[in-house]
Image (tube, rainbow, N blue to C red):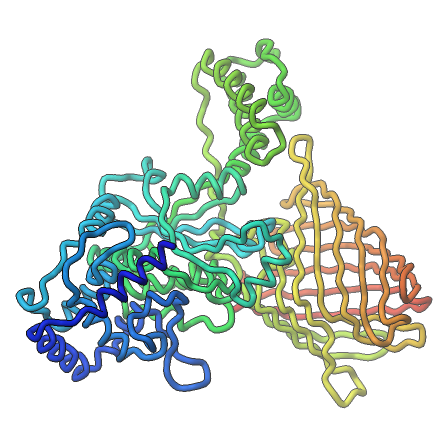
Length: 633
């Protein structure tokens, strides 16, 4: 209803006839704009979100709200849109409200840019006061912008690659009061759609994406407390006029819908479009065709000379809690667990002073808050216990404030998300050469640093091979999606690990032929250990294969898998795993696999990987070995 009211108001204002003097001056402005080709300027193309067509000549506007374009063909015609915008600026004054703004105020960034480019005569085109915009701008009191990157959250499809948003820092704020700032965010709301429906609908642009502005502490609570995502803050060195221009454009985008596309027109892409408005000589969005991953846009901003200043790490509640518990011995952790379960405080442990007792009470309080936010404890019970722990804590002296160590590798410093692989190896008695390309994102054996431990996300991983004695190239694998969440358990944290993958692969028939099947595999399991040394895991998995060469064209099976992931030294990773699948439906057979995979990284953008595997399938046995070099870019 609000968009409809705004659109109606704009159409009404545009349809009003101009006075003769206004018409003469409008024609003069349009002629001057055409003479210097303002419609082709980068500033104009950025303000109206035009993007060059991929194949056909011309441009198309990316906004998907009719009222964002003032000309009937403004989405594809920059000249007509500029002319219609100038005409709209001559509309008579209005009384501003939530649904009515003068075009000079509704499109305040366009107005200011055209005013400066064409040197409007205020006597012939009177400027409007724009009281609502001025009040909004004064409330922000912006003097600095900060790019915020909450780390990847694998349990939310829209955030599995991370997220980016923009914090607007006021002139009277410092690091201690940054939570009171405001954040500009572009996001989509999937409503009640689950992960599968969200993924499909977001791939074809069926969700509306909207810009919004909200208090930063609300976003920190969402990311840090509820989703337990570490946050990185990158201060951007924009000038004050650039900040003003960006905020003017953010005001214009407030009610505008952009169709959300998971891979390209997402939060990361549209944040870059704001930066191009602020500083038009930045060429950011054009660097990405096909997919835009948030961490890559952070890298791009860091790579701009002089763009990024101070970088601040804001650990998630889960990170803070784990750091607290890591500084405790087994007896102290057990005490914290009992306190968080509601056991009354009964004095300090033998040999323990009051400061140590205070540290245990703080740890128990943070554990209760964590369980409250994650839903592991009823909210009312958590609130009562939190209050009691704080009361007990208030009777003791202050404990030492142990800071959480900042990770050695920031997200923008980790390996790049695209990977190309050159391989050689042997399967059965046939040698092969292979070429693989993965557009995104990270697997467990990739170089460490900058990514969430235990979170594996591979998309569209394509492998081609040429086998010795063959005249052609074989499509060996095409992984549409491969997601693994491997989360070790301990005495306090009890997560469930899970996995899902689907794509084209090969299976071996009883006659020795390798045939292509579409395989979907998934399961749940448990893991124990420490990512700095070793993690042991076990899953119960289900697999469904579909293919013309299979009996009844499909096979469905169930079985266990176990594995050991180790990191003997920081640059060397290895994984030993075994898997059994008993296919009882469709094509009956038993499939067993034992594999050793190891990787040695050279820097963060190169790795050497060796994989050995032994397969038992449909009564036959065969082995494979592959040595590959991987380049991240």
